[in-house]
Image 1 (cartoon, rainbow, N blue to C red):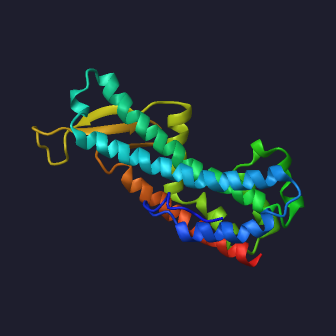
Image 2 (image 1 turned 120 degrees about the horizontal axis):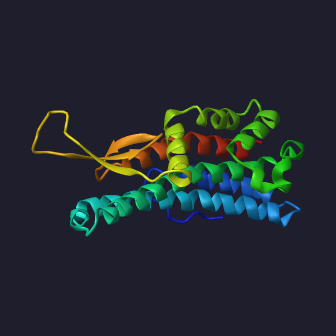
Image 3 (image 1 turned 90 degrees about the vertical axis):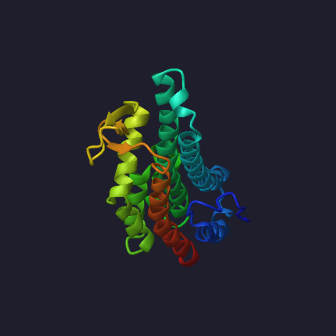
Length: 232
């Protein structure tokens, strides 16, 4: 399978992800169960699409904040909604990158140790935790296992997970105002408060910086997946 140029920007590990597919496809293509192959291929594609959706949400917010249209919106509710929609979509897509990759790796691992991957018959139960558990049981000494386990200890992943859970399951973000640290009474900072997650200053790069963090989280896992697929 040839990987197109859908993800030429944003730090996505294009070469390693394509190489992972190239190596994995030799095994998955031979599966006797069509649904398993379809799940593997669909989740591989979802990693790319969710990453792109996160980038586009970040870029859309940047464009909105730089356009000058935000302050002229008729109501404060409309202003908050336009910012909130892009932020919520970003965090939903960003976390889904890792959920989709875990799902993809689960169906790949099943090709070599099916007894340790029983959830292929109930795929709605597959998540990052179950993938970690299956890889620990089946491939304890492999780098891909260490990377999967390490992911859920990293602060940037935990922030992504926590923020997504708040925004998608509990609360909308809130627009707040504060004086800058220098005490300038002629300036006001706009802050975006996500209760239970974080408070950040609203600005054009508030999501763009987080795209880089997603890429940094993703790259070592994809590199390890590539090596695993090539050597298993």
